Structures are given as structure tokens and as C-alpha cells.
Image (cartoon, rainbow, N blue to C red; front, side, top):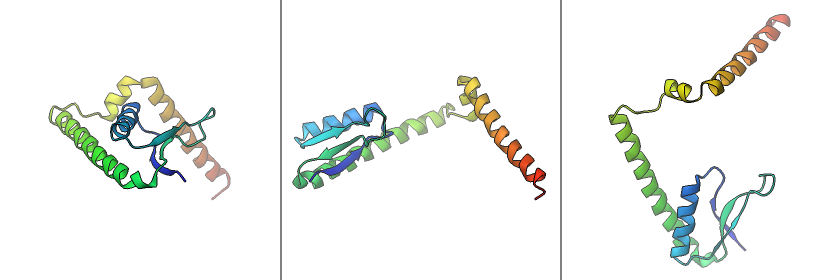
Length: 121
């Protein structure tokens, strides 16, 4: 029976590629499933051999710790340089998208409050 090793939903392409390469370099027998035509299946890496489970999990734990350390270092460097992302910089990148989100949120609040007062609660 196969074992779920690494779910791929929401994983960046570069990380998925690095994990595949890591497993292949260590001769760990795995296969991959996709999300399917409608995106409802589970994209993941699966192990075929139970005997390789411990080795594969140790490799993944070590890899993820290295990736976390590298990402944390990049974040701290950007924080020191004053390039930390903020709401204002995100708004400047995609103003129309943010205006739509804010408009939708305000509409939901307005309708909720209006219905509350109309019902007399």
C-alpha cells in the first residue's frame, strides 16, 4: 500500500521540483498524482516502499528546515533594508483588485447592517 509523503496543493513549483529532485537523487521510489482535470483530486508525492518512509521523512524534514532558514534570512534582510511588504505597496501593485475586494467587503457589511435594522433586531 502506498503512503502519502508530500501533498503538493499550494506548494510553489520550485519547491515541488526540489523535493522531486531530492527524492530521485536518494533513489527513493515515489510517484506523483495530479489535481486532475477539475482540480479536485489530491496532488501529492506518494511512496511505494514502506521501508523508505523513515529516510524520506528525514530528508524532507532537513530540506524544509533549510528552506525555512533561507526564507527567514531573506525576510530579515528585506526588513533591515526597509523593503518589507505593506498594505500600501500591495495596493500600489494591484489597485483595481484591492478596490474590488474592499468594495465587496463594504457591500457585505452594508447589507448585513441594513437587514439587521429592517428586521428590528
